[in-house]
Length: 220
Image (cartoon, rainbow, N blue to C red; front, side, top):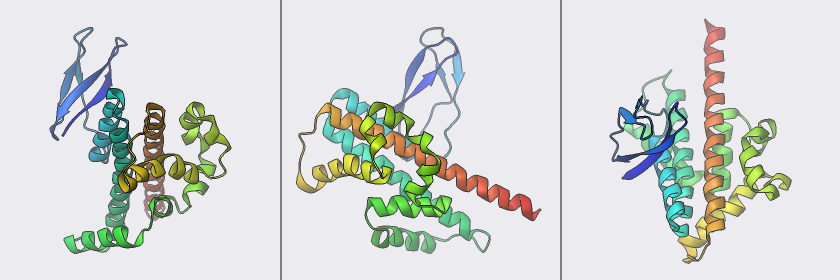
């Protein structure tokens, strides 16, 4: 898989680093000032990050259909990654997870987690103890970029319903019904929604990490 990501230099230049496969470069050279910038491999779900980067690239090339499909795939990849990650962590105080555990969790996710709206709530509950909308009601700043670009999202009673309707239903029309005539504004909204959702899920992940650290601190 080929993808690229942005790197910012101290001289003010922002440029993209191109990668093939999963061998991330250790450094990059600024094309403006020629400084060497050492890169740190990102924590978390690199695959989800790569897929979203590919969606952004397809958006820039004008392939709106593929941008929408990849954006949705990136979010779904992040959802299942966090579901598997925290089920493993929760089991580790008892024993090390096995392949059988992974298969059981995969079956649970695939067969019992429901549609994407239900999966938002399932992951949010696992990470924060709250529903998706309840978490955002207390962390509304995570929606600032979406509200700024798409003011209609600010008046939506349920952020989850807005994201499902404006984003995932477009994906469904492509993969379920063969509708491939979406335009640039449609794809731009979907990629923005995907970026917003990844930030929301990252904040949920951080919340669960903080709660776990606090629990361990009180037990010491």
